[in-house]
Image 1 (tube, one colour):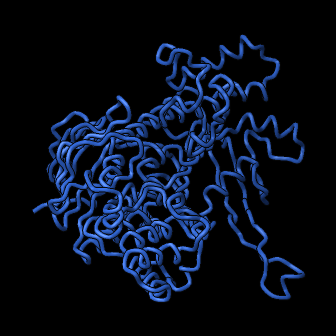
Image 2 (cartoon, helix red, strand yellow):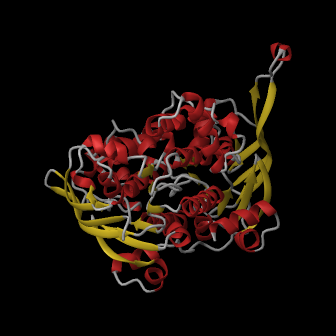
Image 3 (tube, helix red, strand yellow):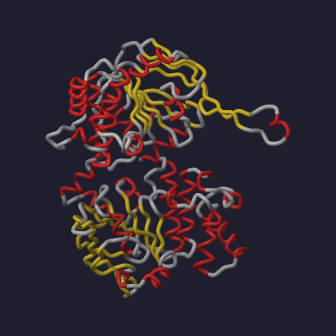
Length: 525
Protein backbone atom coordinates (compact mmCIF):
# COMPACT_ATOMS: atom_id res chain seq x y z
CA UNK A 1 0.00 0.00 0.00
CA UNK A 2 1.23 3.54 -0.82
CA UNK A 3 2.43 5.81 1.98
CA UNK A 4 0.92 8.71 0.09
CA UNK A 5 -1.72 8.58 -2.66
CA UNK A 6 -2.41 11.95 -4.30
CA UNK A 7 -5.51 12.00 -6.50
CA UNK A 8 -6.57 14.88 -8.80
CA UNK A 9 -4.87 17.53 -6.64
CA UNK A 10 -5.60 21.10 -7.75
CA UNK A 11 -4.46 24.39 -6.18
CA UNK A 12 -5.86 27.74 -7.28
CA UNK A 13 -5.22 31.34 -6.30
CA UNK A 14 -8.33 33.21 -7.35
CA UNK A 15 -9.05 32.19 -10.94
CA UNK A 16 -5.49 31.07 -11.64
CA UNK A 17 -4.74 27.31 -11.39
CA UNK A 18 -1.20 26.70 -10.13
CA UNK A 19 -1.54 22.92 -9.77
CA UNK A 20 -4.02 21.28 -12.14
CA UNK A 21 -5.42 17.82 -11.29
CA UNK A 22 -2.19 15.93 -10.67
CA UNK A 23 -2.00 12.38 -9.32
CA UNK A 24 0.94 10.35 -8.02
CA UNK A 25 1.77 7.76 -5.37
CA UNK A 26 4.79 7.32 -3.09
CA UNK A 27 5.57 3.82 -1.85
CA UNK A 28 7.20 2.94 1.51
CA UNK A 29 10.97 3.47 1.35
CA UNK A 30 10.80 5.08 -2.11
CA UNK A 31 12.69 8.12 -3.37
CA UNK A 32 10.29 10.00 -5.64
CA UNK A 33 11.19 13.23 -7.49
CA UNK A 34 9.01 16.05 -8.80
CA UNK A 35 11.03 17.91 -11.43
CA UNK A 36 10.28 21.03 -13.45
CA UNK A 37 11.17 24.68 -13.89
CA UNK A 38 10.26 27.55 -11.58
CA UNK A 39 6.52 28.16 -11.66
CA UNK A 40 5.66 24.58 -12.61
CA UNK A 41 3.87 24.00 -9.28
CA UNK A 42 6.35 21.66 -7.56
CA UNK A 43 6.75 23.52 -4.27
CA UNK A 44 3.07 24.45 -4.06
CA UNK A 45 2.24 20.74 -4.41
CA UNK A 46 4.38 19.83 -1.40
CA UNK A 47 3.21 22.78 0.72
CA UNK A 48 -0.45 22.02 0.00
CA UNK A 49 -0.02 18.47 1.32
CA UNK A 50 0.90 19.93 4.72
CA UNK A 51 -1.73 22.68 4.65
CA UNK A 52 0.91 25.41 4.39
CA UNK A 53 -0.52 27.33 1.41
CA UNK A 54 -2.41 30.46 2.46
CA UNK A 55 -5.34 31.96 0.53
CA UNK A 56 -5.55 29.06 -1.90
CA UNK A 57 -8.41 26.82 -3.00
CA UNK A 58 -7.21 23.23 -2.72
CA UNK A 59 -9.23 20.32 -4.10
CA UNK A 60 -8.70 16.62 -4.76
CA UNK A 61 -7.47 14.02 -2.29
CA UNK A 62 -4.16 13.26 -0.56
CA UNK A 63 -4.57 9.94 1.23
CA UNK A 64 -2.15 9.26 4.09
CA UNK A 65 -2.83 5.91 5.70
CA UNK A 66 -6.40 6.09 4.42
CA UNK A 67 -6.94 9.62 5.81
CA UNK A 68 -7.35 12.59 3.46
CA UNK A 69 -4.77 15.21 4.51
CA UNK A 70 -6.68 17.94 2.69
CA UNK A 71 -9.74 17.58 4.93
CA UNK A 72 -8.02 17.51 8.32
CA UNK A 73 -8.45 20.42 10.75
CA UNK A 74 -5.39 22.48 11.66
CA UNK A 75 -5.22 20.93 15.14
CA UNK A 76 -4.79 17.43 13.67
CA UNK A 77 -2.37 18.62 10.96
CA UNK A 78 -0.06 20.04 13.63
CA UNK A 79 0.33 16.52 14.98
CA UNK A 80 1.25 15.16 11.53
CA UNK A 81 3.71 17.90 10.56
CA UNK A 82 7.17 16.97 11.76
CA UNK A 83 5.93 13.75 13.36
CA UNK A 84 4.82 11.71 10.33
CA UNK A 85 5.63 14.08 7.45
CA UNK A 86 8.55 16.51 7.72
CA UNK A 87 9.92 19.09 5.32
CA UNK A 88 13.34 20.46 4.41
CA UNK A 89 12.90 23.91 2.90
CA UNK A 90 14.84 25.31 -0.04
CA UNK A 91 16.81 28.11 1.63
CA UNK A 92 17.91 27.28 5.19
CA UNK A 93 19.12 30.83 5.85
CA UNK A 94 15.53 32.09 5.60
CA UNK A 95 13.90 28.96 7.07
CA UNK A 96 16.02 29.01 10.24
CA UNK A 97 15.37 31.62 12.92
CA UNK A 98 18.41 33.96 13.10
CA UNK A 99 17.70 34.82 16.76
CA UNK A 100 18.07 31.27 18.11
CA UNK A 101 20.97 28.82 18.08
CA UNK A 102 20.82 25.74 15.89
CA UNK A 103 20.67 23.52 18.97
CA UNK A 104 17.73 25.43 20.45
CA UNK A 105 15.75 25.15 17.21
CA UNK A 106 16.35 21.40 16.91
CA UNK A 107 15.65 20.82 20.62
CA UNK A 108 12.32 22.61 20.27
CA UNK A 109 11.09 19.82 17.99
CA UNK A 110 11.85 17.18 20.63
CA UNK A 111 10.12 19.22 23.33
CA UNK A 112 6.96 19.90 21.29
CA UNK A 113 6.63 16.59 19.48
CA UNK A 114 8.03 14.06 21.97
CA UNK A 115 7.57 15.83 25.30
CA UNK A 116 11.23 15.59 26.33
CA UNK A 117 12.66 17.85 29.00
CA UNK A 118 15.03 20.67 28.08
CA UNK A 119 18.06 18.66 29.20
CA UNK A 120 16.92 15.57 27.25
CA UNK A 121 16.09 17.68 24.20
CA UNK A 122 19.50 19.37 24.23
CA UNK A 123 21.26 16.00 24.28
CA UNK A 124 18.96 14.63 21.56
CA UNK A 125 19.74 17.68 19.39
CA UNK A 126 23.47 16.93 19.63
CA UNK A 127 22.91 13.28 18.71
CA UNK A 128 20.66 13.99 15.69
CA UNK A 129 23.05 16.71 14.46
CA UNK A 130 25.94 14.22 14.74
CA UNK A 131 23.96 11.73 12.62
CA UNK A 132 23.89 14.26 9.75
CA UNK A 133 27.69 14.44 9.66
CA UNK A 134 28.23 17.87 11.26
CA UNK A 135 31.67 17.97 12.85
CA UNK A 136 31.91 18.85 16.56
CA UNK A 137 28.11 18.72 17.07
CA UNK A 138 28.37 19.54 20.80
CA UNK A 139 29.98 22.85 19.84
CA UNK A 140 27.91 23.53 16.74
CA UNK A 141 24.59 23.39 18.62
CA UNK A 142 25.62 26.70 20.19
CA UNK A 143 26.07 28.37 16.79
CA UNK A 144 23.62 30.74 15.15
CA UNK A 145 22.63 30.14 11.49
CA UNK A 146 24.90 32.91 10.16
CA UNK A 147 27.89 31.25 11.83
CA UNK A 148 27.52 28.07 9.75
CA UNK A 149 28.38 27.35 6.13
CA UNK A 150 25.65 26.63 3.58
CA UNK A 151 26.22 22.88 3.85
CA UNK A 152 26.16 22.97 7.65
CA UNK A 153 22.91 24.97 7.67
CA UNK A 154 21.33 22.45 5.29
CA UNK A 155 22.44 19.58 7.54
CA UNK A 156 20.91 21.38 10.53
CA UNK A 157 17.62 21.68 8.61
CA UNK A 158 17.74 17.97 7.81
CA UNK A 159 18.46 17.16 11.48
CA UNK A 160 15.43 19.20 12.52
CA UNK A 161 13.23 17.43 9.98
CA UNK A 162 14.44 13.97 11.06
CA UNK A 163 14.10 14.60 14.80
CA UNK A 164 10.90 12.55 15.05
CA UNK A 165 11.93 9.93 12.47
CA UNK A 166 9.13 10.79 10.00
CA UNK A 167 7.73 8.30 7.53
CA UNK A 168 7.87 10.82 4.66
CA UNK A 169 10.41 13.60 4.07
CA UNK A 170 9.55 16.44 1.68
CA UNK A 171 12.85 17.92 0.43
CA UNK A 172 12.32 21.18 -1.49
CA UNK A 173 15.43 21.98 -3.60
CA UNK A 174 17.77 20.84 -0.78
CA UNK A 175 20.95 21.26 -2.86
CA UNK A 176 20.25 24.22 -5.18
CA UNK A 177 22.58 26.79 -3.59
CA UNK A 178 25.35 24.34 -2.64
CA UNK A 179 28.76 23.62 -4.15
CA UNK A 180 29.10 20.43 -6.18
CA UNK A 181 31.02 18.55 -3.48
CA UNK A 182 28.61 19.66 -0.73
CA UNK A 183 25.68 18.78 -2.99
CA UNK A 184 27.05 15.25 -3.42
CA UNK A 185 27.49 14.98 0.37
CA UNK A 186 23.90 16.08 1.08
CA UNK A 187 22.48 13.64 -1.48
CA UNK A 188 24.56 10.80 -0.02
CA UNK A 189 23.42 11.81 3.48
CA UNK A 190 19.74 11.80 2.47
CA UNK A 191 20.16 8.37 0.88
CA UNK A 192 21.87 6.97 3.98
CA UNK A 193 19.27 8.40 6.36
CA UNK A 194 16.44 7.24 4.12
CA UNK A 195 17.74 3.66 4.33
CA UNK A 196 18.49 3.97 8.05
CA UNK A 197 15.01 5.21 8.98
CA UNK A 198 13.14 3.36 6.25
CA UNK A 199 11.36 6.55 5.22
CA UNK A 200 10.14 7.74 1.84
CA UNK A 201 11.45 10.95 0.25
CA UNK A 202 9.65 13.37 -2.05
CA UNK A 203 12.44 15.37 -3.72
CA UNK A 204 11.50 18.65 -5.40
CA UNK A 205 14.10 20.00 -7.81
CA UNK A 206 14.81 21.51 -11.22
CA UNK A 207 18.22 19.79 -11.39
CA UNK A 208 18.05 16.69 -13.56
CA UNK A 209 21.55 15.67 -12.49
CA UNK A 210 20.30 15.45 -8.88
CA UNK A 211 17.28 13.38 -9.98
CA UNK A 212 19.49 10.95 -11.91
CA UNK A 213 21.78 10.53 -8.87
CA UNK A 214 19.11 10.22 -6.20
CA UNK A 215 15.59 9.19 -7.20
CA UNK A 216 13.91 5.86 -7.99
CA UNK A 217 10.93 7.36 -9.85
CA UNK A 218 10.29 10.81 -11.29
CA UNK A 219 7.30 12.90 -12.35
CA UNK A 220 7.89 15.85 -14.70
CA UNK A 221 5.73 18.95 -14.10
CA UNK A 222 4.98 21.72 -16.59
CA UNK A 223 2.60 24.61 -15.87
CA UNK A 224 0.93 22.80 -12.99
CA UNK A 225 0.47 19.44 -14.71
CA UNK A 226 2.38 16.16 -14.64
CA UNK A 227 3.31 15.54 -18.27
CA UNK A 228 5.36 12.38 -17.77
CA UNK A 229 6.17 9.93 -14.98
CA UNK A 230 8.04 6.67 -14.55
CA UNK A 231 11.26 5.04 -13.40
CA UNK A 232 14.20 7.43 -13.58
CA UNK A 233 16.25 5.21 -15.90
CA UNK A 234 13.29 4.79 -18.27
CA UNK A 235 12.35 8.48 -18.40
CA UNK A 236 15.92 9.62 -18.98
CA UNK A 237 16.64 6.95 -21.60
CA UNK A 238 13.35 7.25 -23.51
CA UNK A 239 11.54 10.54 -22.70
CA UNK A 240 8.10 10.61 -24.34
CA UNK A 241 7.01 14.22 -23.78
CA UNK A 242 8.58 17.17 -25.62
CA UNK A 243 9.03 19.11 -22.37
CA UNK A 244 10.95 16.23 -20.78
CA UNK A 245 13.21 16.06 -23.82
CA UNK A 246 13.72 19.84 -23.58
CA UNK A 247 14.84 19.53 -19.94
CA UNK A 248 17.19 16.63 -20.68
CA UNK A 249 18.68 18.48 -23.67
CA UNK A 250 19.39 21.62 -21.61
CA UNK A 251 23.01 20.70 -20.86
CA UNK A 252 25.20 23.72 -21.71
CA UNK A 253 26.83 23.42 -25.15
CA UNK A 254 30.37 24.63 -25.84
CA UNK A 255 30.43 27.24 -28.61
CA UNK A 256 33.30 29.67 -28.04
CA UNK A 257 35.77 31.56 -30.19
CA UNK A 258 39.19 29.89 -30.70
CA UNK A 259 42.04 30.67 -28.33
CA UNK A 260 43.75 33.98 -29.07
CA UNK A 261 47.54 34.55 -29.16
CA UNK A 262 46.98 38.30 -28.54
CA UNK A 263 48.64 40.08 -25.59
CA UNK A 264 46.60 39.98 -22.35
CA UNK A 265 43.75 42.43 -21.93
CA UNK A 266 43.77 41.95 -18.16
CA UNK A 267 46.83 40.98 -16.16
CA UNK A 268 46.97 40.34 -12.42
CA UNK A 269 50.20 39.86 -10.51
CA UNK A 270 50.58 38.55 -6.95
CA UNK A 271 47.10 39.62 -5.80
CA UNK A 272 46.75 39.36 -2.05
CA UNK A 273 43.78 40.25 0.18
CA UNK A 274 43.94 40.07 3.98
CA UNK A 275 41.57 41.09 6.77
CA UNK A 276 42.49 41.97 10.37
CA UNK A 277 40.99 39.67 12.99
CA UNK A 278 41.05 40.10 16.78
CA UNK A 279 43.37 38.10 19.02
CA UNK A 280 42.00 36.75 22.30
CA UNK A 281 43.57 37.87 25.53
CA UNK A 282 45.93 40.71 26.41
CA UNK A 283 47.88 40.39 23.15
CA UNK A 284 44.76 41.56 21.29
CA UNK A 285 45.04 44.97 22.98
CA UNK A 286 48.18 45.79 21.03
CA UNK A 287 47.85 44.10 17.65
CA UNK A 288 45.55 42.19 15.33
CA UNK A 289 45.99 38.85 13.63
CA UNK A 290 45.51 38.48 9.89
CA UNK A 291 43.15 36.35 7.84
CA UNK A 292 44.43 35.92 4.28
CA UNK A 293 41.48 35.52 1.91
CA UNK A 294 43.52 35.60 -1.31
CA UNK A 295 47.15 34.56 -1.63
CA UNK A 296 49.55 35.57 -4.41
CA UNK A 297 47.11 35.07 -7.31
CA UNK A 298 48.53 35.74 -10.78
CA UNK A 299 46.72 35.25 -14.10
CA UNK A 300 46.04 36.86 -17.48
CA UNK A 301 43.01 37.06 -19.79
CA UNK A 302 43.48 37.75 -23.54
CA UNK A 303 40.84 39.76 -25.48
CA UNK A 304 37.76 37.74 -26.42
CA UNK A 305 38.67 34.86 -24.08
CA UNK A 306 37.11 33.45 -20.91
CA UNK A 307 38.97 32.60 -17.72
CA UNK A 308 36.90 30.31 -15.49
CA UNK A 309 37.47 30.33 -11.72
CA UNK A 310 36.12 27.32 -9.83
CA UNK A 311 36.12 26.31 -6.19
CA UNK A 312 33.81 25.80 -3.24
CA UNK A 313 32.31 28.55 -1.09
CA UNK A 314 35.05 30.28 0.87
CA UNK A 315 37.74 29.43 -1.68
CA UNK A 316 38.40 33.10 -2.50
CA UNK A 317 36.64 33.32 -5.89
CA UNK A 318 34.47 36.34 -5.07
CA UNK A 319 37.36 38.06 -3.24
CA UNK A 320 39.44 37.69 -6.40
CA UNK A 321 36.62 39.22 -8.48
CA UNK A 322 36.22 42.17 -6.10
CA UNK A 323 39.96 42.84 -6.26
CA UNK A 324 39.90 42.78 -10.08
CA UNK A 325 36.97 45.25 -10.02
CA UNK A 326 38.80 47.57 -7.65
CA UNK A 327 36.11 47.10 -5.01
CA UNK A 328 38.40 45.42 -2.48
CA UNK A 329 41.72 46.64 -1.10
CA UNK A 330 44.56 44.42 -2.25
CA UNK A 331 48.30 44.25 -2.66
CA UNK A 332 49.82 43.34 -5.99
CA UNK A 333 48.70 44.76 -9.33
CA UNK A 334 45.76 44.62 -11.72
CA UNK A 335 46.04 46.12 -15.20
CA UNK A 336 43.26 46.27 -17.81
CA UNK A 337 44.24 47.52 -21.28
CA UNK A 338 47.44 48.87 -19.74
CA UNK A 339 45.65 50.87 -17.00
CA UNK A 340 45.91 50.05 -13.29
CA UNK A 341 43.73 50.99 -10.34
CA UNK A 342 44.91 54.13 -8.56
CA UNK A 343 43.85 56.50 -5.80
CA UNK A 344 42.65 58.98 -8.42
CA UNK A 345 38.85 58.62 -8.65
CA UNK A 346 38.76 60.32 -12.06
CA UNK A 347 41.30 57.90 -13.52
CA UNK A 348 39.46 54.95 -11.96
CA UNK A 349 36.22 56.12 -13.55
CA UNK A 350 37.75 55.54 -16.99
CA UNK A 351 38.82 52.05 -15.96
CA UNK A 352 35.39 51.22 -14.52
CA UNK A 353 33.86 51.69 -17.97
CA UNK A 354 36.21 48.97 -19.25
CA UNK A 355 35.36 46.55 -16.41
CA UNK A 356 31.73 45.69 -15.73
CA UNK A 357 30.08 43.01 -13.61
CA UNK A 358 27.01 40.75 -13.75
CA UNK A 359 26.01 39.48 -10.31
CA UNK A 360 24.56 36.11 -9.29
CA UNK A 361 21.06 37.21 -8.29
CA UNK A 362 19.53 39.78 -10.65
CA UNK A 363 16.53 40.28 -8.36
CA UNK A 364 18.73 41.77 -5.63
CA UNK A 365 21.21 43.52 -7.96
CA UNK A 366 18.51 45.47 -9.88
CA UNK A 367 16.81 48.32 -8.04
CA UNK A 368 13.08 47.59 -7.66
CA UNK A 369 12.37 51.35 -7.75
CA UNK A 370 13.96 52.01 -11.13
CA UNK A 371 12.44 51.38 -14.54
CA UNK A 372 14.19 49.36 -17.23
CA UNK A 373 15.19 52.55 -19.02
CA UNK A 374 16.73 53.96 -15.83
CA UNK A 375 18.52 50.71 -14.93
CA UNK A 376 20.07 50.06 -18.34
CA UNK A 377 20.82 53.73 -19.02
CA UNK A 378 22.49 54.35 -15.66
CA UNK A 379 25.96 53.57 -17.00
CA UNK A 380 25.58 56.18 -19.75
CA UNK A 381 24.55 58.84 -17.24
CA UNK A 382 27.74 58.16 -15.29
CA UNK A 383 30.27 57.47 -18.06
CA UNK A 384 28.79 59.42 -20.98
CA UNK A 385 26.88 62.39 -19.49
CA UNK A 386 27.21 64.27 -22.79
CA UNK A 387 24.77 61.85 -24.49
CA UNK A 388 21.35 63.46 -24.81
CA UNK A 389 18.07 61.96 -23.62
CA UNK A 390 16.95 60.93 -27.12
CA UNK A 391 20.28 59.29 -28.01
CA UNK A 392 20.48 57.61 -24.61
CA UNK A 393 17.05 56.04 -25.12
CA UNK A 394 18.19 54.77 -28.53
CA UNK A 395 21.32 53.21 -27.01
CA UNK A 396 19.24 51.60 -24.23
CA UNK A 397 16.97 49.99 -26.83
CA UNK A 398 20.04 48.74 -28.75
CA UNK A 399 21.51 47.20 -25.60
CA UNK A 400 18.19 45.51 -24.82
CA UNK A 401 18.00 44.21 -28.38
CA UNK A 402 21.51 42.76 -27.96
CA UNK A 403 20.24 40.61 -25.08
CA UNK A 404 17.02 39.60 -26.86
CA UNK A 405 14.51 41.98 -25.27
CA UNK A 406 12.32 44.28 -27.37
CA UNK A 407 9.17 46.37 -27.09
CA UNK A 408 7.52 44.01 -29.57
CA UNK A 409 7.75 41.24 -26.96
CA UNK A 410 7.12 43.52 -23.98
CA UNK A 411 4.92 46.55 -24.76
CA UNK A 412 6.04 49.50 -22.65
CA UNK A 413 9.37 47.73 -21.98
CA UNK A 414 11.30 50.83 -20.94
CA UNK A 415 8.78 51.81 -18.26
CA UNK A 416 8.48 48.37 -16.69
CA UNK A 417 10.07 47.44 -13.36
CA UNK A 418 12.26 44.35 -12.61
CA UNK A 419 9.48 42.47 -10.79
CA UNK A 420 7.54 42.26 -14.07
CA UNK A 421 10.16 39.90 -15.55
CA UNK A 422 11.18 36.28 -15.00
CA UNK A 423 14.56 35.32 -13.53
CA UNK A 424 16.13 34.74 -16.94
CA UNK A 425 14.76 38.02 -18.29
CA UNK A 426 16.09 39.91 -15.26
CA UNK A 427 19.52 38.42 -15.87
CA UNK A 428 19.30 39.69 -19.46
CA UNK A 429 18.54 43.16 -18.08
CA UNK A 430 21.62 42.93 -15.85
CA UNK A 431 23.75 41.97 -18.85
CA UNK A 432 22.29 44.86 -20.90
CA UNK A 433 23.13 47.27 -18.07
CA UNK A 434 26.76 46.11 -18.21
CA UNK A 435 26.95 46.13 -22.03
CA UNK A 436 25.73 49.66 -22.62
CA UNK A 437 29.12 51.25 -21.81
CA UNK A 438 30.83 48.80 -24.19
CA UNK A 439 33.17 47.19 -21.65
CA UNK A 440 36.23 45.23 -22.65
CA UNK A 441 35.87 42.71 -19.82
CA UNK A 442 32.85 41.34 -17.95
CA UNK A 443 33.15 39.77 -14.51
CA UNK A 444 30.42 37.11 -14.31
CA UNK A 445 29.77 36.07 -10.70
CA UNK A 446 27.74 32.83 -10.79
CA UNK A 447 25.54 34.30 -13.58
CA UNK A 448 23.36 31.19 -14.00
CA UNK A 449 23.37 29.40 -10.62
CA UNK A 450 19.93 30.76 -9.65
CA UNK A 451 18.31 29.87 -12.99
CA UNK A 452 16.42 26.83 -14.29
CA UNK A 453 18.33 24.54 -16.63
CA UNK A 454 16.58 25.72 -19.80
CA UNK A 455 17.03 29.41 -18.87
CA UNK A 456 20.65 28.72 -17.91
CA UNK A 457 21.31 27.35 -21.39
CA UNK A 458 19.71 30.41 -23.00
CA UNK A 459 21.80 32.85 -20.92
CA UNK A 460 25.03 30.96 -21.69
CA UNK A 461 24.21 30.98 -25.41
CA UNK A 462 23.59 34.73 -25.15
CA UNK A 463 26.96 35.29 -23.44
CA UNK A 464 28.72 33.19 -26.10
CA UNK A 465 27.04 35.20 -28.86
CA UNK A 466 27.94 38.54 -27.23
CA UNK A 467 31.56 37.46 -26.86
CA UNK A 468 31.77 36.65 -30.57
CA UNK A 469 29.99 39.88 -31.56
CA UNK A 470 31.77 42.36 -29.28
CA UNK A 471 35.07 40.56 -28.61
CA UNK A 472 34.71 40.91 -24.83
CA UNK A 473 36.77 38.94 -22.34
CA UNK A 474 35.05 37.20 -19.41
CA UNK A 475 36.18 36.41 -15.87
CA UNK A 476 33.68 33.66 -15.07
CA UNK A 477 33.20 32.64 -11.43
CA UNK A 478 31.19 29.47 -10.87
CA UNK A 479 31.06 26.14 -9.06
CA UNK A 480 29.28 24.47 -12.02
CA UNK A 481 31.65 22.33 -14.07
CA UNK A 482 29.16 22.10 -16.95
CA UNK A 483 29.23 25.91 -17.27
CA UNK A 484 33.04 25.89 -17.22
CA UNK A 485 33.16 23.28 -19.98
CA UNK A 486 30.75 25.33 -22.09
CA UNK A 487 32.33 28.76 -21.62
CA UNK A 488 35.96 28.76 -20.48
CA UNK A 489 39.23 28.79 -22.41
CA UNK A 490 41.44 28.71 -19.30
CA UNK A 491 40.59 27.53 -15.76
CA UNK A 492 41.82 28.40 -12.28
CA UNK A 493 41.00 26.03 -9.40
CA UNK A 494 40.94 27.74 -5.99
CA UNK A 495 40.86 26.46 -2.42
CA UNK A 496 41.30 28.49 0.77
CA UNK A 497 42.46 31.56 -1.13
CA UNK A 498 45.13 29.74 -3.16
CA UNK A 499 45.29 28.85 -6.85
CA UNK A 500 45.92 25.09 -6.76
CA UNK A 501 45.85 24.37 -10.47
CA UNK A 502 45.51 26.22 -13.76
CA UNK A 503 45.50 25.43 -17.48
CA UNK A 504 43.19 24.88 -20.42
CA UNK A 505 39.74 23.34 -19.90
CA UNK A 506 40.91 20.00 -21.28
CA UNK A 507 44.04 19.96 -19.12
CA UNK A 508 42.29 20.81 -15.86
CA UNK A 509 38.97 18.98 -16.19
CA UNK A 510 40.02 15.92 -18.18
CA UNK A 511 43.44 15.34 -16.60
CA UNK A 512 43.38 17.07 -13.19
CA UNK A 513 46.66 16.92 -11.28
CA UNK A 514 45.50 18.01 -7.82
CA UNK A 515 43.35 15.83 -5.58
CA UNK A 516 40.96 18.71 -4.85
CA UNK A 517 40.34 19.23 -8.57
CA UNK A 518 39.70 15.52 -9.00
CA UNK A 519 37.15 15.68 -6.17
CA UNK A 520 35.33 18.61 -7.82
CA UNK A 521 35.23 16.87 -11.20
CA UNK A 522 34.05 13.58 -9.65
CA UNK A 523 31.28 15.34 -7.68
CA UNK A 524 29.98 16.94 -10.89
CA UNK A 525 30.01 13.68 -12.89
